[in-house]
Length: 247
Image (cartoon, rainbow, N blue to C red):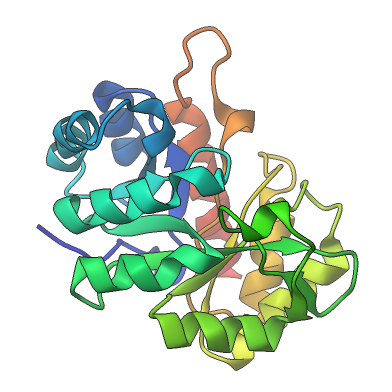
């Protein structure tokens, strides 16, 4: 069971939501394996139910499981850590303050763990108060370089920049990408990404020199009737990513 996500040209790995095991398999195939499939911990009433179900996703996607919080819900942080320990997935979504516990419980350095930080309206600065208690208090705004260093201290792998609201925080995102490139850290742009702005968002990270990029494309490619992520849209995202890397 591989703990390493499959990156297109060792650079880009998609992150999309899976509504079912069948949907996960379809999206995995559409992305030619260059994807991790998000399954949200918030959708389960217990650890046991989540573990039993998420293992089915692992089985059909070569362990391309991304354990999610659920819209960045900080109250899911501890559950995500516990699930990660049992499932040993390729990818884990965490609030900033949950990264250290997750890495310790995983017991290995390979699985990707992101740390959620939020835009602040100030270029070069991010809000790290994204945990269960800190998210209810005042913002904790620090330079992006400091956030990266703290995440490295805790065993984190990447910055999850959420909620980007598409291109609404463009200059801030450019600064985050620059810092990730300079400090050899992965970047996961998240929030409001769709088929129209995907190329711009990924291109910025590539041109900045970010070595590992995991863009999250969620609601914009989900069929509102079935709740499934559209495999044809995943295939289109892969085509765009290939075009970016071919430039």
